[in-house]
Structure formats: C-alpha cells, structure tokens
Image 1 (cartoon, rainbow, N blue to C red):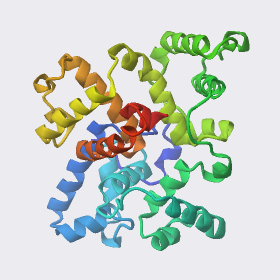
Image 2: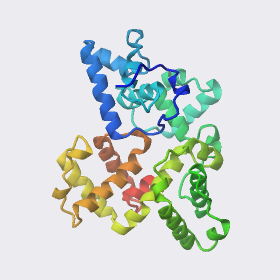
Image 3: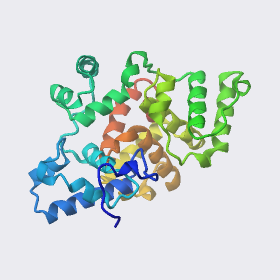
Image 4: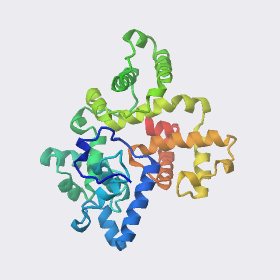
Length: 318
C-alpha cells in the first residue's frame, strides 16, 4: 500500500493517470468501498449516502484512505469515479430533448452551479455535468449531429495525432474521392496503432473542432479504431440481434460471465467476443455501463435501427 494521500498531492505527482477507469479498477474500487463500509459498520442507507452526491462529514477521510490503493489516480479522481459509477441516485433514464434544452437554459442562467441545476432537473450533479460536456459545453450552439464528413474525420485524426505527438497527415494525402481518402486514413491509423495506448485529451480536441463534443470525438475515434475489425467480420443487423438475444438469455452480470462458445449464430467464439466488445465500447462510452445496461441499450437501438435499416453499431456511432 502507498504512503498517506492528500487532496492536493496531485500537484507533486507526475505519473497520475487520467481518463476512463477500467473495469478492473472499478471492481477494485467497489470492493474497497464495501470493505470500508463493513469495517465501519455502515448501514445500506449510510453506504448510499457515502456514494451519493455529498459525502457525509463523518466519512470525509474515506477518499484519501481508498486513494492509497490507487497510487496512479488523484484523490479527486477516486472520489469522482465512485460518484459516477456507484451513486444509487445517478440514473434517471435517457435525457429527453426538453431536459437537454432546460439544462442549456439553466447553465446560461446560473453558470456551472451543477448542484443547483441538478436539483432543478432532479438528477445528480455529476450526471448533469457529464451531460453538459456531451452537449458540447460552451460550444453547444455549434454542435453538429448526424454522419461525419470525410473532412471532419480527417481533422479528428490529425488532431489526435497532434495530441500524441504524431506527424499530421499531409493535405496532399487527403485529396481524392471520399472512399480512397478514408482508406488512406485507416492505413495511417494502422501504422501508428502502438501509440494509441497514451491518454488523449478529448476536451482539447473538441475545443479545436467546435462542432462536435468531446464524447462525439472519442466515440468516432473508437469507431475508426474498430472499423477494420468490424468490416472484416461483416456482422449484419440480424447477426447483431442474434448475438444480443443469446447473450441476454445467459443473463450475465458482467462480461466474464458470457459463454461465447454457447452462441450459435454461425460465428466463432472469438468473432462474437470481438463484436460484443466493439458494441460495448460504442454504447458504453465513458459511462462504464454494466453488462445489463448495455443489453438494455442494444434493445432500444434495435427498435430504432430496425426502422432505418441500420446496424446497431451504426445507430450509436453515426
């Protein structure tokens, strides 16, 4: 276990990890919170308060204690990961267009007072803050929805390359018909794939693009990384739904519970596992959804995509 942690020790640490938490990290965090609750005799109600929006004063030292087990994460990151993922009041369902408009109006009126806005919308402060980012933040009026143009894709890839200290693709290489340009972009992505393990600053990239949010940019990048795998496997709409139904019948609590060998859709276990992971990443994004929540979203996408002749992946990444 590491030495004592403080809320401000991030200022002196140079190896702190940022960005999305892995399933392994979240599982470890969940166990540590439960261990803390058991050690201090917390009731179910008190545990809910601990993971809720505001940590009770009597448990104010919990985050510095748990952060000892995450030496590469700041205390604030540990605190936020718990609030985002384990807050029992954090999920009110999909945002409606009316709620999104109300959020925009409240931010224009109150600024970034997330707690006050959350009370008005009857959601949690973090849920509201995350949604604001998803809408594009201060660039929300410029945000574009719908398919990406080849010019937008090229700019996204070049901004990611810049962020990772990779040389931009020259404008000469980005000339020609859309199909050929996209194939060139895919080859560049393949060439530098070993560089993509580093953290990418999606907020900075979205600020440069302006018409797409940080979430839009990250999801599109995820799609580009997995597009080759997806096209090689050639899953169609019916195969996606067959995969969904057979996984749902297994009623898995997490991905590790899925037995891909039992899925009978004419595909190999590895093909089905890869396809599931592509779908999971596209649907879950930064939300770290549970397997059951991902299955619920696939079911929703099925109802919409089926009427538009899309694949499930198209629905979430178009």
